[in-house]
Amino acid sequence: MTEKAKRPSLTSLVGQMVVPGDNIMNLPTDGQEVRLGGGLRQIGDHLISTRAGIVRHHQPGKYWMEGSQKRYVPAVEDSVIGIVSNRHGESFEVDIGAAAKATLPMLNFEGASRRNRPNIKVGQLVYARVETVHREVDPELSCVDNYGKSNGFGALNGGYMFNVTTGLARALLTVPTAPVLAALGKALSYEIAVGINGRVWVNSTNVTTTILVSNAILNSEFLTSDQAEFMVQKLLECLKQTADA
Amino acid sequence: MESREDGREDNQMRQLACERNLLNRADGSARWSQGQSCVLAAVYGPRSTVGRKENPEQANIEVVFKPKIGFAGVEEHELEHVIRKTVEGVVLTSLHPRTGISVILQVLQNDGSVLACAINATSMALIDAGVPLKGLVAAVAIAVQESGGLILDPLLTEQKLARGMVTVAFVDAQPTEAGVPTEADTLTCTTSGLFSADQYLDSLNWGRTACSRIAAFCRVSLERYQRGSQMLA
Image (cartoon, chains in turn cyan, green):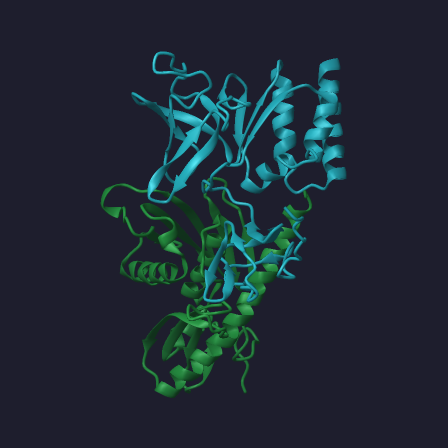
């Protein structure tokens, strides 16, 4: 296969803030393929935004809008944290913060069979992957990857969960690691799971650490990387002072 | 030309102010003020609804309008209806079938043009909630005076002395459904009182100009908020 030539983005608005109803770009006339993600729709030859946010572009020809919301709208292959709200014969009913409850079939766990069912109770947290989404039916979750391995998915035991905006959740999942998590990781040891649905789960051996990590994350939404590091340093100093006292 | 009681020109708006994301539990919220008039809007949804409200084709929109004092009466229910029709005209309801979107409006202070103020607050709260929209909505009120002259964005006292009132809302979307870029689409127009057709058409033109300026303000307000969250990346 020949190497695909990198295509420049078709709009100068990439990385810019737009509001609903803005014309992002006109459809290319030379037969280039364009794929639309969330927040964009096509009207005639125009691509129009339906949300306020930043236009993003990925090779080749993928465009979507990135914003920050409190309400989660499910999308396939999102990693989410759900609260088990009911247990049916073959599946769990899970609240992922979307309009409809999601279903998590009991066989969608690593090593699960009809005989060997996962032991999850109502009220427990699960870290799962969104497998199917359709506006007419409830979303379906899975706790295994495409190879049948758990790969980090499954029940979350202990710890503490809190809500953030979807924008902050996405920022925490970036590579390289978000500055606030990098700064916390240098000084403390803790476990974290971030769901793109705006839920963050933190666990550590010590309650004070869990509280500190959660506060640092909640404070970090509008901070630059230097500010985030400074904020974490301040919190750690407070922790040290109370421990000494 | 005699200036108005607060020293404005006839076609001058009061000062606009908007603040978003103030309510902790709502999915989206905004406080919009035009001078002393101020409305707080909260948007919940798209969330699941029950029973008869569930529509298999589109999201169900519910508007609750609360006056500053007392209970909602006939006037408030009329406003709720106008605002609901406006919201239905701009939200892409077919993207979230079988769900409900609730808009709760609380008047914090009524100093005239409260319907326009409420529609503007709703628009910003819907954007804050991330509900898919056709475009930015902006609304403005125009009063027809006894002398026959028009005044933009009337105060409560001016509103009481007026012969008639026009409240218009426009979508500030660039291309229309047909794909032809236009300046703005009329979304809602409610009138009360008695005035001539020319006065009505003039007030529509005034409204269109004022709404494009309000939309420009919304854009600046949204960009400023976005810049804050962009600092993380």
